[in-house]
Figure 1: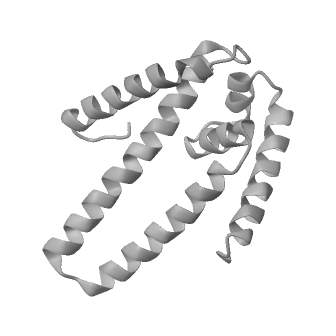
Figure 2: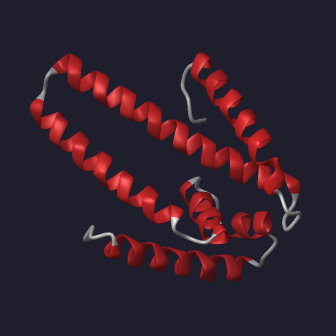
Length: 143
């Protein structure tokens, strides 16, 4: 889902397996093992995708020499950087909820994956979004 060609998919798969292996000691049985694996995989995929996007953006800018795109790319990269820095400051449960939301999961699916009710998932998601906004504002990046 994150990569278009099979070579990139294999690279991502290897990176996910490596991260699962490295972080296995952090699994505390507070959730299902599959939920923990999913969290590690999604986080790894997002970081991997972010790195790949930077490579593509830099290549396109260098090859096309278009100055307008460079400004847009810089702004987008800056926004993503602020966003990811803010997400890293959230508590683990809030990070998971934000990533589930980014993945397009419904409130019901988020609740099922985290072992909470749909209503609780909705409330926690709204609170996590508010925390994220506050963190981003404190970083000095205005809306």
